[in-house]
Image (cartoon, rainbow, N blue to C red; front, side, top):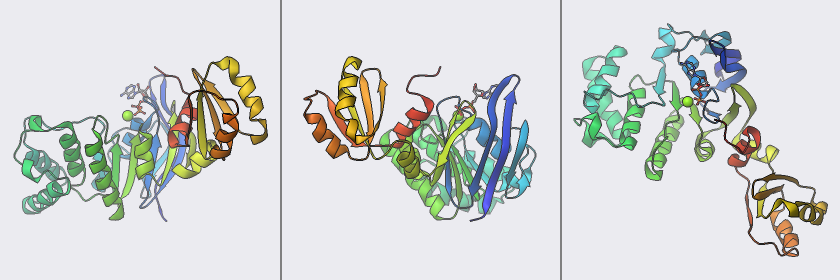
Length: 305
Ligand SMILES: Nc1ncnc2c1ncn2[C@@H]1O[C@H](COP(=O)(O)OP(=O)(O)O)[C@@H](O)[C@H]1O
Ligand SMILES: [Mg+2]
């Protein structure tokens, strides 16, 4: 697979604040690449440099072999952006919002009409074409942002937290559409703080925290390497940890105490649960390990305000 986006030592500073602290990554043509991280990790800043609206402070960033830069019109022509903020024009209708974008890309009137009709069908908004933006639900607005991002038939689609604030139905519809775009050959760059979203969409991802990349890999590899196969959660006072861990000594598994919960990371949850039964503990739960465990392990289980 050819590399579409390549970053080396990519850095962004706002005055003294280092928003992106010298990161390296490569995104292959046709894959869905995710930036996963808590608020303030530097995800939006990174993708804004990729889609040429924010200047790079240091390091190199190329898209399709061309240096990414604020005035790079050639790159803007091949990129579609689904922004984190819903920045639709409230004074215009759904259709007019798309027409304006078609003009940015010098798409002729007739061609624009055809594409708009097709895109509104794609995001299931054809019945809303002449509605005002204020009449749309948040889910509809987010779908319109997708349609708008596709008006220039982009090779590279940047989706910055595309499902924030949506209910499960709306979220699943957007995931369907994003997967469909990938099937059609687009390269997808996704930022998210939703683990399920990353698991549903990403072929590969990086976990970002405080401007740095902590880990990179496929979702399942990250879970396997960082956590293992299963997690047992035991909700007991910490005083009992010594006794429990001693009882499980033969299993050789990692553990972590957070607040009221003792987490045990293991391969053989069933065997471990059987052994735990001997201790007759209340509130014990066995479940598969997830990306959320990886995320919390890497970025900490407490809040970073
Ligand atoms: N235009 C800006 N001016 C100053 N600081 C900014 C600006 N944009 C983002 N930041 C800061 O950069 C850091 C990374 O922000 P951002 O990239 O938006 O993170 P994320 O998208 O992961 O939530 C944060 O500390 C944020 O406050
Ligand atoms: Mg952001």
